[in-house]
Length: 256
Length: 266
Image 1 (cartoon, rainbow over the protein chains, first blue to last red):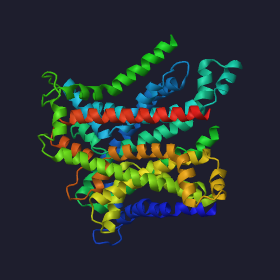
Image 2: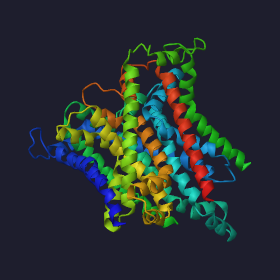
Image 3: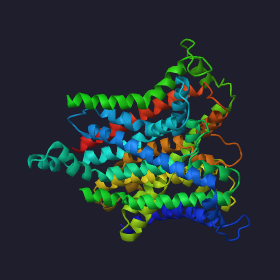
Image 4: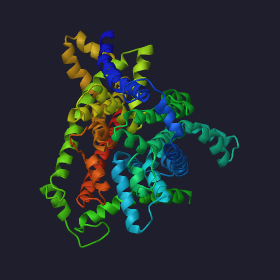
């Protein structure tokens, strides 16, 4: 048996090379000036760069709004899909998951074109609509999965013991579905902050999100500042992951 | 009553979710250059794709070819690497197992932009010339974790003794692998391959950062450049419709397979 554990070694080396080293390089490049000398100026520059700070604030705002809307629209949908009495067909579930497999860029362009033809002005409203449209499946799917695996006898027991349907939902179903909600938030919030291209297409270049300024800096060969912005993004990812309970497997294990 | 409300809500969401896709699909059957004009039913745009007579020239065809080549290679290598690694990880214990599983999760949690920028910096750092090979390596790195996760549950379901039994009965390790292990893991490998294939097909950000400056275009980067120039090439409408249909079919096949294996288990 011990010999077969060696089969993981090539992949371990691969991961160190293509996952760990690149992330280390983000840190290294963000702490270097153009000539390779050590500097903190890339990091401090962000905090004095009003353009970047603005974009950052807008990204967080859009991401929070998008996450909330997705949660409010997605939770009921996941609840209905997971309930055998309300939904018997597996097809509706596939239909909700399907958009996750289609290029976000394509879906976004289709949305933007539809808005154009319908005569909507592209701006904040269309951005939010397009974002919700892009990310709703990512909220529904994890919540649906958790609700589906949930043991119904808890809810039934609560009802038998005299809880009203509202109480059952608030005290039993909702707390038990928290792992799904946190992974849903994780799957919607971070990608929204970091998208590039999507926001430009949905707002006709009026609103930029954080991913776009990272891309702009990298593409105009300002690697060090671009890396510093990516580092800031990484720190936020780390924080949200920790705040939302991080390791999914442990959270899932806890519900069983 | 409650049931009808629930069904109405679900279908309302689905209609909104699919409106743009249907909109594109409907207007793929007309020749009008501007979207939203209906100039009569026609297969012209579909014919254009297959005859290569797109007014953007050979660009779109080349982009489709690149996308498929990259997706097939990346998915095949990921499936191989992911399966071998899953067997290895499954047999690991304790902290080693935790570490490699943690590393395996990183590419799945990281937003595309971060993965793209970090790999871009890697290739710059190594003075590795960016092009086909760098894009394929990048795709393998974000596809393999999904294969590992698809194969792992199959290893858990497998009776660990049958491999040993094959060895005891005189099979060489190679034979035991081919005749015993692989057939058991095949469903996981197939869904891992499909997953990796669609991941690679869909990718935009990582390709965008790792393709270098040799003018390598995949479908996503082609669409991006096209849309920046203002307005979509009309031929992209039938293409989106086709891709949508293909993915729908793949997903249904995958789900039917899964449902069937679950039924067999029961």
